[in-house]
Length: 175
Image (cartoon, one colour):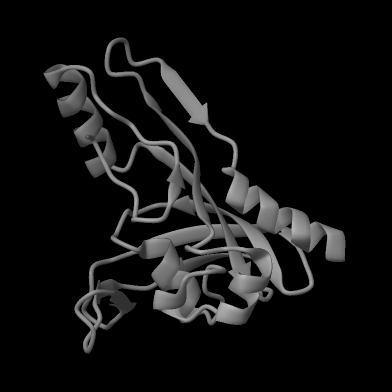
């Protein structure tokens, strides 16, 4: 395994087929040359609708099972753009500059726009139930990187799983 996704997050992952590929890909993630794209359904409407969240993340001061924006934490940068707005939520395209544990979830929670269904980080359980979401609505939509064999740029994307697509369908039908 070259990298990981949070439990409950779906989408594209990279698995190396050789030691050489593993070494090259690990370095690419460390040097931040991998283009990591996520889609997140967040509660409400972030303002501005396009922006950068530059806020350090570390362990939560009171709850060791989660993370938080804290002074002195590790630098963490998330770029986002709302691509579809609904009455109760917004679908955001998210590009990670860094890759901290729970980064997207923590950053949007700090903006008071947690991922729909993310009860750990303050999501509204009533909205989650109404949309049939039993986990955070967060999907690793795509990855791009230099192929470890020949350096050519490759990109991989994946569709939403049925439960996330179903939630979007409900929101679209209400608009």
